Length: 237
Image 1 (tube, rainbow, N blue to C red):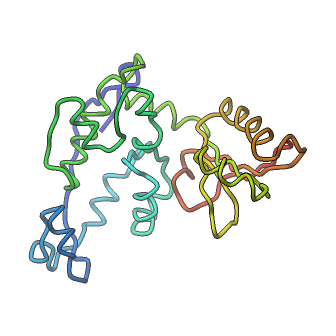
Image 2: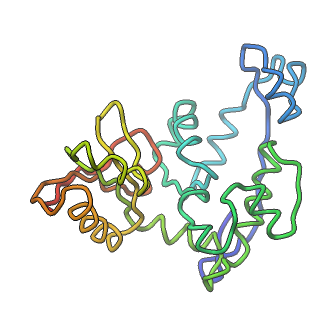
Image 3: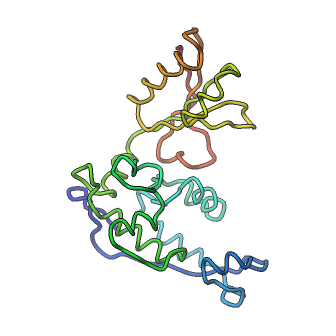
């Protein structure tokens, strides 16, 4: 599928590939109930990797609704996914700022008056395309145009390096998440202006105006939502 940059709308043919694969183990009943996919339906089935690779040829941007979950799985299966830019229609669009009650795909579609057979890959993709082809309520452009623009900009993961223990409640309330592996509180930030403002918030609220050096990670669309690190940088508060 192509996107007309002038309008932010899809143009040309939309190619569809939807196939099941045998996971090599029984599908839990709760998953069968949600998706309608039974063990009989997947028995002996396998994805056509050559067909997927052909669809990826010439692709500039992959869009997923929760790319942080989808991208690592895709890259583990097909290396070609790791060489592409990714955007997340769940995280890269501030849906609540646009008056949406939830960023979940079903909710976004329902807010627009659309109901569909959710939790099946092809139907989810068609629903997402319809949602993103609509103009964002608080912007003059579509969701697709917004994602293309965001993919051209870096985002950041700011770490509250060596933050004092008594700051943990404020950090958590602010939306920072604790990494047990790295032993640091961190948050994701979408642009450089917001990053500068967050530096100021950290200095006042977490470090109590002390002069400290914090670490942050600069991510482009080729690394964003993957397990690969971005460019590691430091900032003096």
